[in-house]
Length: 487
Image (cartoon, rainbow, N blue to C red):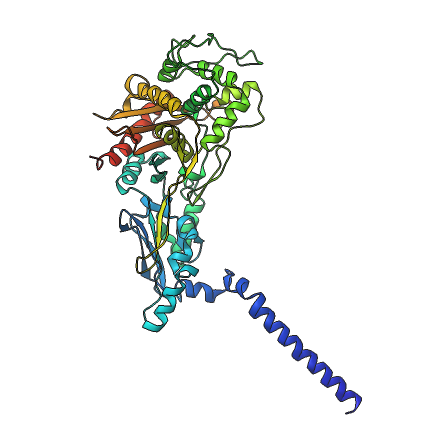
C-alpha cells in the first residue's frame, strides 16, 4: 500500500473511532441528561401521551385529564374547582411547566416513577395502556371550602393543621387562579398565563407557604412560651414588674399600648387585652438568645417541606436589645408564614409537642396499591406539657373575655390570639390582620389549629382592620368545618 492510501486509511479509521466514541458517549453518558432536557420535544410528547394520575382530597379527585385539540400533546391537565385547590395542587402546564404537588410527585402522576416499573412491565404484556398513580392528600374538603369562601375577595391566606399528627387540613390563598386556563400550549393559554404572571395581586403565589408577614401580637404566645420555659415567669396570674410607660431598652422610645391596665399586668391579662409593654419587657428579660432558642423550636429560621417547601419564618439572631423587645411583640424583623403560626398554635394545643406538618397521606399505584405512606413525625418540643397548658388557659381567656370573642363556638372550648401587624416605612401601609386559634374536643385533644392572615380587604377605615374583626371569623368557620364530623 502506497503512502497516500495509508494516510487515507488511517484518517478513515480515526473517523470511525471518533464516531464510535461519540455514539457511546451520547448513549451511555449523556443519555439521561438529553432525555430530561426541556428542549427535548419527544420527552414532552411522551409526558402528555397518557392521562395523568390524580390528586385526591377526601376520596375524590380534584384533577383530571382532557384530550388536547390540535396539538401533538395528546392530553392536558384539568382541575375541578381550580381556584379552590390551586394552593394545594399547583399547576401542570404543557407550556409553562409545573409547581407544587404536580411537580414534586410528577413521576407518580405520569407513571414514570421507578417504583411503578413493575406496573409498566405488566402493562407491556397485558396490553393495558400506561397509567399514572395517585397522590392522596391530608386535606379536609369542608375546611378548605370554609377557608376559601370566608376569605372571599380579601387578600390573605389560611393554614390549618391537625395538632395530633401534623396533617395539613386546609391551605387557602386568595386571590387564587384556575390552573386549567393555561394547562395547554395555545395562544389563549399563553394569554391567561401572562395575565396571571404579571398581576400585582400575585395570584400564582401560595401565600400560606410562600409569603412571610410580621405576625404582630399573635407572636406573643411564642414570647409567653419563652418566658415560661426560661423561668422568667412562673405564675401567669401574678403581677409582672412592667412599668408604664415602658421604655425600649437602650432608647428613649416608649412602647405604645392600645389597651388599658397594662402597668404591672399579669401575663394572663396582658395576653387577654394584648399589652405590648408587658411582652416587650418580658422578651427583654428572656433575652435575644433565649427568644431565638424558643422561636427555633417552633420552626422559625428553618425551611419546612410539606412536601411543598415553605419559606423560612424569621426571628433575627443578631439584633440588639431594642430590636429583640420589638420582635417579642411580632414586629421589627420578625416574619412568619401562616403555616408557621399554625405550627405554633398546634404545638401549644398538643401539650407542647410539635408534629411535622405534611399534606400527602400516601402515594398509590394505578391499581391503588400503596407505594408510600406517610407516618406522623414529632418535630420538636418547644415547651413542656405543663407550660403548654398554661398558654392554653391564657388563649382560652382571650376568646372568652378578650380580643378574640368573634371566634367563640357554642359548647366548644376555643383558644386564640389576635394580631394587627404594622408594616411599611413608618408603619404607613395598611396593617395585616391575624388570628391564630385551636378548638378542643371533650377528651382534651385538639383536632384543628388555624392561622389566618388578611393582607388586604375592602375595609376603608384603618382602625377597623383588626385580627378579631377580620381574621377571627375566618378561623371560626374553618374550625367549625373540621368539628362538624367529630361528634
